[in-house]
Amino acid sequence: MLTLDGWWYGDGEEGIHRACGGRAVCPHVPDIASGAQQDVQRYLDGVPDDALLVFLHLHV
Image (cartoon, rainbow, N blue to C red; front, side, top):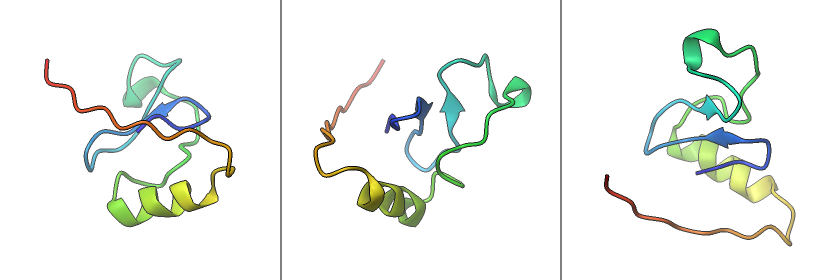
């Protein structure tokens, strides 16, 4: 999931900020405490009603 503030969360993983090279060097505070499903759901419940939610399933 990509949050409105640029955080990317994989399936159950901690977030990675779009502007940073990795978690170890990232000074930003994540939108979601963890990649846990309940935290992701809480975030989604709080986004504006006009937000567009897109589901992508990608294998590289």
